Structure formats: structure tokens, C-alpha cells
Amino acid sequence: MTYRQRAADKTPECQLAECVIALGGNVGDVPRSFTEVAEELRRAGCEVSRVSSIYRTAPVGSDAGDTYWNGAMLLRSPFDPASTLRLLHEIEGRLGRVRETHWGPRTIDLDLIVMGDCVLNLPHITLPHPACWYRRFVLDPVVEIAGDIRHPLADATFSELRQRLLDRPLAIACGGPDAPVLERTLRLQFPTQIVIVQPAEDPTILFTATSIPGPPHAARPQPGRFALPPVSGEALATAVLKAALDEPRPIVE
Image 1 (cartoon, rainbow, N blue to C red):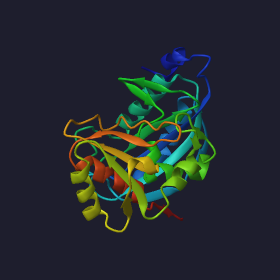
Image 2 (cartoon, rainbow, N blue to C red):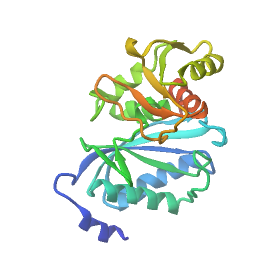
Image 3 (spheres, rainbow, N blue to C red):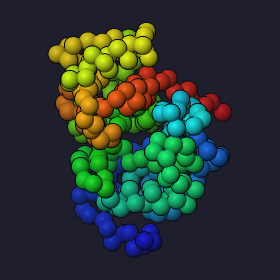
């Protein structure tokens, strides 16, 4: 689909909605790719108003590869959410993104974090981005350029979401039938960075530990409650906490 054809996908309620885009990558000249993303978005008719600093962040997951570059952009899109997401995927493809390994190395990764107050939960698109509220590699760049924007489901700004993750030790609760096993694992993995509390104590992150897996991207914060979908095994919980506890380093040029 060409940019001209995509213009037909506009809807009045979404036209020129303010969007936050998260950028990441760890293969090739990633900072140059970030510049090319902004150029591609403008060429498509988007109004890019702010671009964050570039941050260096720890890889998340055993297959993630080397240290990542991350950033964020604030823009207005003339397209509906699905068409905006398709545009991001097209730009990824032109910049060499190959989707072979889940959470694997990549030249560029573009995520649509929020688009105005839009809330969608469809097979091909979820808004707000379901994992943005606990990932420091998303939150730190977003807060730099758009910290006062509110997460439509969490009843909090992105600055407030980030602030919740700054306490040390971070309050974690585990519920569900496999909670004791998961608690032991997390205590060993993060002995000084987290404290295990009871779910009723309003933890920063709540895991539901079960032998039945839940979809890894289905975390949906509700007002006053930040809970993850059912977690099977320890890999997802460890990845979530690494993303929440990381301290992104801004690159100063």
C-alpha cells in the first residue's frame, strides 16, 4: 500500500491524533536508522514534533543479543491506528527488519505506544501498547519528550508510571498456584532489587503464577492496578523484571 492509498484510511476521530512511538534496535547503525525513521514518517505525512535522546539499555531475554539503542518520538498521524501500525511495519522492512526470533536481535523495532485516548484489543493491534507500563527502555525516552501524556487505561501519566518503578527494592507480588516456586526464583535472581509482598499490599508488579501460560504481551494495567497475565515458568517473569529494573543510559553527544 502506498502512502497516497493509505490516506483513504483516515477516520475523523483519529485524524492527526497525537502518537508516541518507541524505537529500538541492536544490529547495524541504529542511531542512523532512527534518523531515517523520522524522515520516512514525515514523508508519509506524519508531523514529527519531538524526538528523544538515544538511550543504551540492557537486552531482555536470552536471545536478545547485544546492548540496545532505544528512543521515542512524538508525532501526529493522519491515519487510523491500524494504518499507522502498518506504516511502522513497512518502515521496519525497508530498514532491514527480519522477524525470525521472538525478542531477538533486530535492526529496528517500532512500537505504537499510544494514539490519543484510543483503546483497542484486536488480534492485529493492541492500544495502548500492553507492555509499555513496566519497560524502562520505553518509559525513559517517552518521559523525556511526553511525560505528561496519560496512559488511557492506567489513569496515570507516563512520568507517574516511570516513577512507580524507581523504588528500591521494587515491590513484587506473586499469586496463583505456582506462586511459591516463582517467588523463590525471583528472590535468587534479584536478591537486593525486589521485595516480595502480598498481593493485597498493592505491589508495583503482580504476577499470576500458573502452569497454564498466558499470552506474553497481554498485560493490561487497570486504574490503580498493575497486573500481568498468567505466567508459566520463570523466563517471562525474569524478562519483565529485567525490563522494569534496568537503568537506561542517555547518550550525550
